[in-house]
Amino acid sequence: MTSTSVIDELKKSQILELLEQGKRVDGRALDEPRKLMIEINAIPKANGSARVRLGDSEVVCGVKIQPDRPFPDMGDKGIFICTAELLPFSHPSVETGPPGPDVIELARVVDRGIRESHMIDLSQLVIAKNKSVVGVFADNVVVDYDGNLFDTCAYAATAAILSSKMPKWEIKDDVPTLVEGGESNVPTTTIPVSVTMGKIGNYIIVDPNGDEWDSMDARITITTDSNGNICALQKGGTGGFTFDEVIKCGEISVKVGSKIREKLKQAKEGGQ
Amino acid sequence: MGGRDTTLVLLDENGIRCDGRKVDEPRRIMIKAGGLKNADGSAYIEFGDNKILVGVFGPRDVHPKHMSNTDTGILRVRYHMEPFSVTERKNPAPSRREIEISKVIKEALEPAVMLDKFPRTAVDVYIEVLQADGGTRCAALSAASVALADAGIPMRDMVAACAAGKAADTIILDVNNEEDQAGQADMPIGYMPSLEKITLLQLDGILTPAEYKKCVETGIHGCKIVYELQKKALTEKYFGNGEK
Image 1 (cartoon, rainbow over the protein chains, first blue to last red):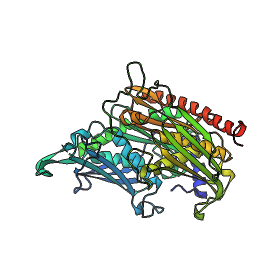
Image 2 (cartoon, rainbow over the protein chains, first blue to last red):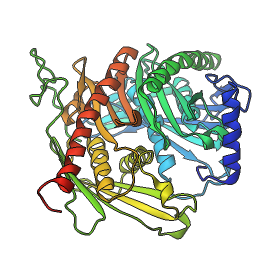
Image 3 (cartoon, one colour):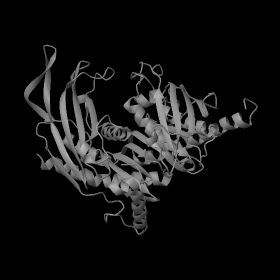
Image 4 (cartoon, rainbow over the protein chains, first blue to last red):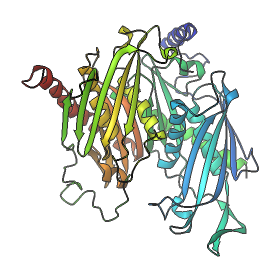
């Protein structure tokens, strides 16, 4: 996806020419994300799930919740792990096998956004201190690729967590045992929303599509929480940002993020 | 990487941090250009208790060949931590964290290195963390810039790096390991001071928009301090009385 070809160079010059007139290849405003479609409970066997389409990028996220041993130095906290994987049919360039640096970065940035916002109150996920805790595993699979997987995966994981039903366990004979009918929502404190922006020339564009993604000089992904605070950030790509651009991107992420947060809330309420 | 110490006071009533520094004071930084005999360029940095060695090869032939690019040279970066560099032995195989850091450091250096002058070649940057104590990626990036310059590779600017963060509700410069573990936010920044471009930027932890701005400003201030030390290291090697 990152290899440059003659076509990419042509696309880039066309994209840049349009930006100089204040336009984008697909007719969006510079700070306008693509259409976001969220379907929750797409995988009923999971404890929570979501199928999210952002433009033509599509991700399915399933949440599995199960008892686990706590991390050695975190006996009073539950576990949250978020992953991301590109399925081989999501793009012709995707190969099977162990994930490359791009995919590892994707998974880690999506995980960090949700983790650092403290969306899930992990202190409420303890079954027996230092012995047994609840683990929440959000696994994203990319079904179709058209740029900006960071946000597509983040929205899918957030929607899936919001829609999850958490079973209840109690310790009986030293093992966590399922309590029938004890289901509850996953304890959440905030709704994190990531907004990825690309820099092409001196223009900052929100939610780059596939063609824009291939033409970007640099990108920045900023996650904000429900209070409008910034909780995670990742710069990527081979270019740089000025101080003013970094501050401006922060402002855009708060503004665009608040609209997307409303959509995530609606999706959750629509599914209950 | 260490355990959590709940009795730790991150900032006392006099505004002094757990390791005795003021809020806007970086740790002791020592950078040395050169040092390795076989590498084309090298650097060693001590950034507080971090000890990091960087060696650079290239521009040289690309292996495997299919990675080469006819339009430009390529930059390859490996960030690696020794098993003995942290409290609990680290598995020597590259972790997902190390792969991500390798990638962000590579992308932070690329805007500075004039690779288009050397098509079909590779520049390899090998970063070895001998001892880690919070903020290794910034220290590694700062040392890597010096090593690239030491290798004589044309550069637009040097990338200087330093973290800013938040602990005890205060924006602080150069987050150490304890502050990273128990603090509220950590923001590593890589910056080209002459070109005024941010080339590495990450954040974990919660900041209000005003704190966010202050944090970026504080980090850039730290980068400028590191930049002077990078220049000093190169000046000492090439214009000082020491070796060559």
